[in-house]
Amino acid sequence: MSNPVESDKKSTDTAKQEVPPPKVVSTPSSPPPAPSAPPAPPAAKLPCEFCRRILDSAENLEKHKKDEHKADLKKLQALHTLSDSIVSKIGAGSSSSFVKPRRFKISVPVKKILKTALYLRDDIGYDSVESVSGVDWPNDNQFEVVYHLTSYSIKALEDTVLALSTKVPRDNPKAPSLESVWKSSEYHERETHEMFGIIFKDHPCLDLLLLPEDWCDIPPLRKDFNLPRRTR
Image (cartoon, rainbow, N blue to C red; front, side, top):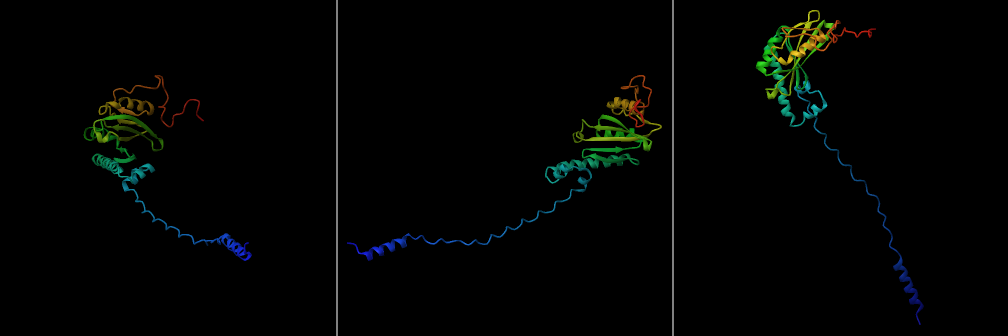
């Protein structure tokens, strides 16, 4: 027969063993310190003076930061030196400006246009005229004639365009023809004569090329030309 005292003791011991241990509630620790801000990048260098003058697009300015741009910059600096040397050779009344990084313009007085053309062909190497265009400046009472020159014989110039420019009075628009220097200018001068009325002296043929034979109005690309029945 079991002892009731021992049974109560065993029950008490079993109950004590079945009581789960108290849960330990962890208190939230303080948040870790925020990472320190990275050091500020060094200030970007401004483009060089040469790039500020002729590299005007964002793409070229970004390219300025890359190593491969150094070679391009060297070419552009050489082209800038070339334009200065041309102006120095031609002398008074001439000037140069960059239209785009590989396209520059040389402006000369009309009396020096033939001499300049010979120098550009024989000494510099511009051996071809790609186009000839006219510009009407009625407020200045002038026409401008622009020859776009390229070179097929000089590798350093093959991707450049030189715009050779001169101006003539609007009431006496005469300029020497450069057909004897660059044969490719023959038809371009003829078209410019037809559209603006500029007379190219010593040109072999200034007959109408595009307009009808019975054209009797002023040249159609002058700014004072109005189409019939469209005047206000």
